[in-house]
Image 1 (tube, rainbow, N blue to C red):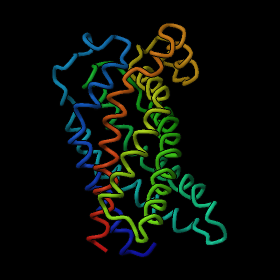
Image 2 (image 1 turned 90 degrees about the horizontal axis):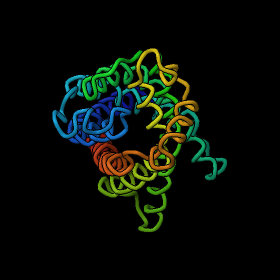
Image 3 (image 1 turned 135 degrees about the vertical axis):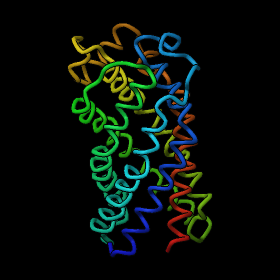
Length: 251
């Protein structure tokens, strides 16, 4: 990646991140409160759904910028013409590296945001590992699917997809990834919102999932799946479509 590509990825990714976070923040608040062990109403219901938005806005630009700079760099470095079947693996690895770098920026603002949304106590260090555990599986599904859908659409129409088509692919990829990783999101939320002396607060994802399964069953593991899918589908449309459009304009 040359200097020009670096600044293009940084700017396009950062602006896309700010746009999607500000637009979809209320849905994220509702999702977090649905997953809270306190229950939706006791966590605030629909009151103050923009609580914590300043911390999210401040973290959005560097978080998204760091992800896409790393993603594009790793994608270029790992790219091979040997076999098209290896492309999804390249995208999975690039997305994983991108998420690790982005999480170092995302986690502090995520802790502040969820404290404001539900008012619990959390440990930033503990949240780092659990955010990585959730975000990497999500990206392992979302980005290879996004790239594959774009390639398929491009092949069918005989030319590279337009930005709006990239956005549609992003919506489908995001929605699917959101659905299959909802239990991990529930576990992360429960850990972040757990009382300091509770078993859940230890930060063990499997233990948190088991606890939810025992007390609430399958419905508990998929708590908030509808607003999560709605938010991330719309988010994928805005985020990846905006990134693609700004990147093309800057290039």
